[in-house]
Every structure is written in C-alpha cells, then in structure tokens.
Length: 310
Image 1 (cartoon, rainbow, N blue to C red):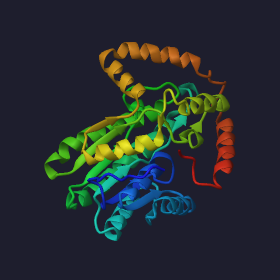
Image 2: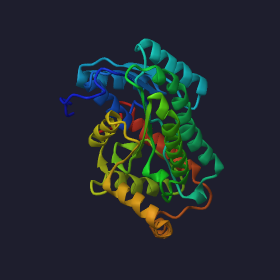
Image 3: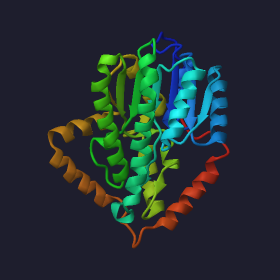
Image 4: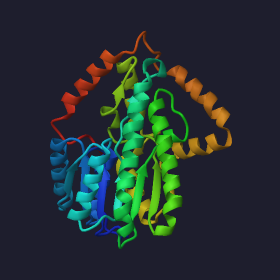
C-alpha cells in the first residue's frame, strides 16, 4: 500500500466508517489510519472486524477501534455513533459506506429485493447520517460527512435496479443535507463511484441465471478499461473530504455517463435497453435456489482471509 506523506486537513482527526470491513470501506479506513486518524471501523461481523483491524494495524502501524453494528437497526447505529464519539473524544469525519448489491433481471425478483436495498443502502445511510450529525456539529474541526452513492443512482443500470433506486435516494439525501447543514459548519460530500476493483462481485447477491449474472458482473468489475483501482478511488475520496467538495464522480466512464444522461436522457435509456439485451435472459421462476448456492460457495471460499482488495 502506498504511504501518504503529504500534509492533510484530516491528519489526527476522529473518523467512523460504516461498511469498513471490506473493499472500498476497508481501504478508506487504512488511508485514514495512515493520516494518524483515530479510526472506528463498523460492520456486522465481529470475526471479520477482528481480522481487518489486525490487517490495518499491520500495514499502517496504527491501532484502530471496531464496532459491531448493522446499519438497518436505527437504535444500534445511534449507540455505535455515541460510543465512537465518547471513545475517540469526539467525531470529526463520518463515512456512510455500508450497502448491498443485488444483480438480477427485474423479471427474477420481487418487491422484497427493492425493500432490502432501500433498507440497507438508503435506510442505513439515513440512520448513520442522522446519528452522526449532532457530534459532527460539535466537532472543533468542523465535521465532515461523506455518503457513498453510485453512478447507478444517476442512471438506472440494467440488472441492478434495486441498487440503482437505493443509490439514487442516497444522492438526493446528500444534496439535501449539504444544503441544510451549510450554516452549521458541517460539510456533506456525496461520492458517486463507477465500477471499482474492490472485489464487490464476491459479496454481491445474484438472482435469475445466477452463474451467468456472476460471470458478466465480475468480468466488468475487474476490467481495467472501465473500472478504477480501488486504492486510487479511496485516496480521491479522502481528498474530496479534505476540500469539502459537494460531489465527486469517480471514473471517466461514470462522468461520461452522468453528462450524457443529463443532456440526452432518452438516448441513454435506449442505450441501456440495448445493453440489457446482451445480459442473461431470466429463467422461468425466480431462481432463488441458484442464488443461494452461489452465494454460499463464495462465502466458504473467502471467510479464511481478509476480504479481497487491491
């Protein structure tokens, strides 16, 4: 991992990262630790948290704190934020990163997939943001709140519709909070990444023709031409927080898609329709058994080590 030698406005601050035990969240925690921040990593799995805390300490020489918490539980999130605030002597930076990715054609899912995405991605972000604002208001460093959205929240992505809907809501939340907190010296930065090489395909849930959905999603997520190195993405996010930017769109493809959708939304929708025709057709029924088997196989393969990152 590259070291961070430049002086940073984040140096020595207190930070909390949800969804911090894998992928982008883990890299953000490591880079905050490189800046000598007092970091609390939050995630649902206690064993995984112990492993990643050791991973961060080994690579940075900095000890981090952990908090077991599911972001869908509002009371648990409130208690986690209160504990981190008390233990770290205040909170200066909070990054809401926890989420879930479901990959399936809409014909192979029902409304429960949308409810799950909204509860975890959007509801978890709301719970984190609302609990974090009071201690961020008290921060002597003028608090920073970061919401991790997605380019999928700017335009609907075929076979990722629940995810896109939830991330769209995260983007709206970030813009609204930015406007309403401006007078209280708290900045809100909404990040909209495109594809990143974080190993997210190993944690996603797949429906329909699950093995084929996994194949196209993992191939695209790992393709250097259209995806972004996760280390670089994490550093750019922290620099956006330093500068208190309102919005950050990562990857050239994501920026191009955002601009094109804003100028010619109907054209983008037609192109998305063409892309959808290239993706696997849904089977008869919902394919839930295939989804469960594929997820279980990947889980057994990855529990023995820190989740894959670059």
